[in-house]
Structure formats: structure tokens, C-alpha cells
Amino acid sequence: MAKTSGKKKEPVGGTKKELVIVTRPVVTPQEIERDERKKKLLLVLKAMEDQGGIYERSLINLIYWLKTEKDMDLGYNFFLVGDVPTSKDLHEDIMALLYVGYIETDPKTKKLRLTNDGKEFLEKKWFDKELYEKIKTAVDELKPKIAALDAQIELTTLLSRPRAPRRRAF
View 1 (cartoon, rainbow, N blue to C red):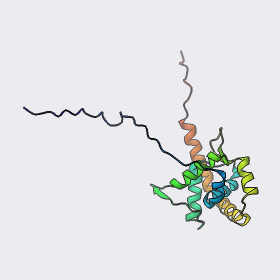
View 2 (view 1 turned 90 degrees about the vertical axis):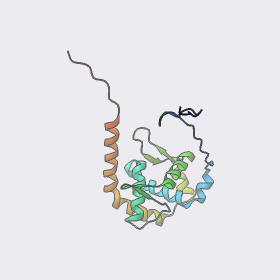
View 3 (view 1 turned 180 degrees about the vertical axis):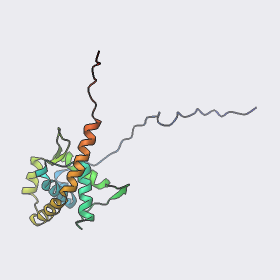
View 4 (view 1 turned 45 degrees about the vertical axis):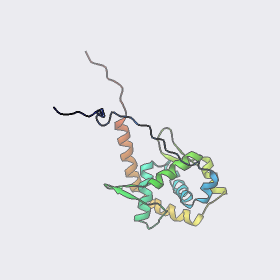
């Protein structure tokens, strides 16, 4: 007769839930003042103001294109998943700027944009006019690609929204 072990079988994959707690240090405006990468990111968002903001996915692509096509390295490392650039550092910097209130997500369009605090920070604490002009010129050249990506994101978002149930016709 075969001997059975006293262990219980684990549930089939996907049925077990686990709480994962990730600790992150608190970000302060003083830390933003010392971080060149975040300040440059604010300049890129300032250059996108006339567009009403930019989606996070479009922003990641824009920073990637600035690095690869315009030879303008803002300090982020990217890796490609398929043809889509991804950067953990860039995502964390976006979250930090959201946390201190220098950028916000537009409630209607879900685009990232500078807040009044973010604009004030750039004007009073740090504003490299020469770098801003260089970024603005490069961003203006890349705007058709950004607009196409934004349109794709908007269409995907529009199609994925739940619709109201239809009445049955009798």
C-alpha cells in the first residue's frame, strides 16, 4: 500500500492571496531641489503644458525618444518589453512628484500636468532657461509621435469603458 504524506495540497495557482507591503521613503520638496533628474522631468512637463498635459505612457515614450533620437539623456535607464520602453526610475520619479504635489493627474483626461506649486518651484527655485529651450525644441519635433500615441491611448480608454445596458426592443 502506498504511503501518503501528511501535507495538505496547496490551492491551484491564482486562488491564494498575499499581502505585500512595500516601504518607501517620504519625499520632500527639499529632496526634489537636490535631484537633477526630477527637475528635468518637470521641465519636460512644462514643455507639454500647451497640450493640456501628457499620459504617463506617452511621457515614458517621450523621455525614451529624447534619449535615443535627440541624444538628450535625462538620466533614466530604459528596457524594452517588446517595442514598449519601460523605466522603473521614471515611474518612481513621477510618483514622487505626484506625492509632493508638483504634478497632478487631470481628473477628466487622466493626463499628467504641472500644478501651480510645480510651476512656482520651477520659477523660484530652479529654472534652467537654456535647457528648457533645448527640451522645448526637441519636444516640439516629437509632438506628432506623441499625438499619435495619445490618440491610441484615448481610443483604447474609450473602448474599454463599460457601457450602459441596452433596452430590449419589443
